[in-house]
Length: 308
Image 1 (cartoon, rainbow, N blue to C red):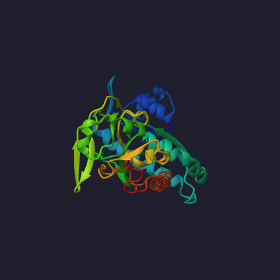
Image 2: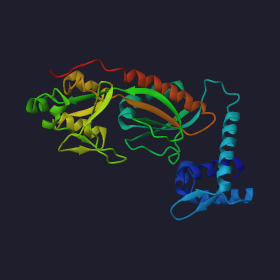
Image 3: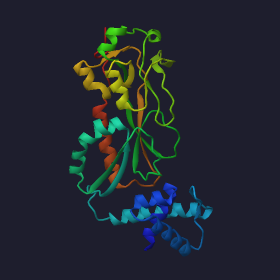
């Protein structure tokens, strides 16, 4: 096996923290990955990885070698594309997006990206679960909400306006809340984070300060699809990104409530692995994604479709 391929396999094992996961990403058997690492360690004359039945970690030598390998692979990729036209990016692109954004915004527009860049193949992950960018070997992931310090390269894609909505059938039975205090007499569809199981509270901005109120509900869900479906079924109010229910508001299937007590918009951030230079295919996808998200998540007008 040539050195460059050995470097690629080693970097993948370190990023994934697993021989098996690295084998899946690279497309070879686990035994081939193990043989490649043994060959590489023999070539460099040092042990690069600690192996246990549960995980794989890097030795001190492995940490230093991993960074050097990344640099070499980046230089190789740049060299391979040296004589390609700047508008001709190529290769496989692994992307992970939140479920509703992937299905409602990105997937319908993806044909235009593929037509524009015929030499890029997209591996699209769509999930409400926050993946580990390095373990999943993704080129970029979109995060919605406050961002923990991840050490990744981050690019802001703006904000998602949030609104409060309910179905007409729910409002006919329970009345229309006028103030957050009225929620004590109402039900909400509760949303539990798929990553932490934490149940969200009702949030709104008042006098430029974030305010929170604990709410009750008989149904708790952990996906945006179920969240909206339960609201449409009349099971309670929800707080939701406006783009998510734009069509339902337009048809009257859902109605905005508490329009003057909206939560703060949620930041959207695109994360990339730490590299000196992003591959051209990642750059053009990031630019395209930013443009279509900006179109789909324009600011929500004041009190549009609100119940009265």
